[in-house]
Length: 584
Image (cartoon, rainbow, N blue to C red; front, side, top):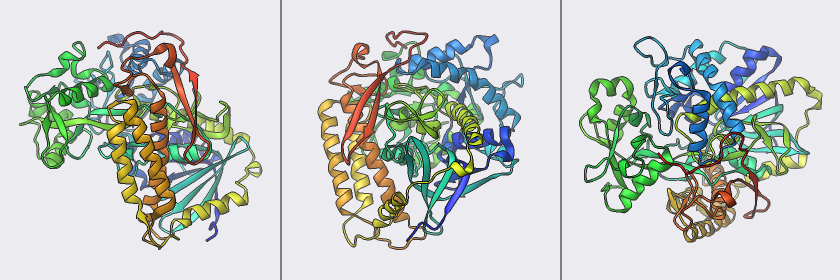
């Protein structure tokens, strides 16, 4: 079947989470109907995974009370284990307070202090309580606020339940996006002057994850297949508190409000690992402490799933505070674990939660090619992007904050670029490229027998969880990488889509998602095996020390053949602070 038609917009936004919506709002509030915008979403717009963000959004709101840009920047750089680019960090912390106040003016229901000012609470790795929050449903309310703001404007269109299969880069410029309209079962080509990739992270590379089932690394995979490098992709964050057995996020806000982590001896064991910060040490530190407790026999075991865990105790906070500050956490614990945190502790263990790395960009979220040159017209925002704000370990509440800042920056720059380019100058991909895309997408329906994509996806996730979790080692990662390459070969030769219809073919979508997972798994595994040190979320038993002499640099990984990658490195940009030992 030929491509049904070509759809044109001045600016395309790929993804409808906080970053994508913030970009759309920025374009509209600055340029109105001068710039026509299309928003392509894999799901219904308000079901993007950003709605699941719970704990808060970081910003310096009260310098008169002791906070400062320098303190937020230092906390971020130290939390990143000094792999963050410090110019990016400074930019970020200075822009964030305005974002909080803009959302406030647009109707965001921020939680308040008794004096009526916007409330903030402590969060891991932050030396000041700067997590701005709306109870424990911050992401949901941010999404709602941004969407409501966007509805004030004309000149934009949403494409809900369209699956992006690939993007096209030719001659150093963005050329287009291919996407399936799931309701029609047709493949379309989108052309635009500029595009912003805001398609989220890759949490579903793992079985035990906080992420929605739709978060399958699509942003990284479509960029990688287009020849765009990924940066620092080996750094996957494991949030300390995933609910047993589902993996649903138990917000760090629970510890920010005073929750304790305890082992099977009833000890607050964080005293052994981070005596100053305790439960509010950075996430990589807390996750390693929890897994050490479990590995040394001081954990518990869930009978049905076999997962080992420790306990998060909120009982001392009291029912009134839990209901006011952590209502969703109480509801989640009761509904999905049969535990009322008012009466008993919550079973938790480290869970795949965030990708620090992503699509290589510059300081202002322009997508860069292998040579470090801007791919004209192309930007990335939110978790999809790696401007190197988070380095080797992200601090809690800096993620939704980066979504806002990067959405604002990319929206403004994409609109400015689009206004300089004539529609007549917008080139689409060559016809042969479109034919190749059709053959790839619909080719999945031609095989009459084989292995379901679900089986390959399940096996890949098992490997990722076994060899690329909180603790890693060279032998295990080499084994894991070899298995991933086996599954990639199996996928190419044997994957089978049983449903041959084209309308709402979720079996086909699952196969395309599995292709994306396999691409990202190859990148993560290759980059992790190559980095022979421990830094932030990447901890190796065989190289347990941070090695600044050899590894104070970013991984740049590019795909150049089916299962082969090219890995180069670039230095970390240090403007203010030299690395020191991290102690909490």
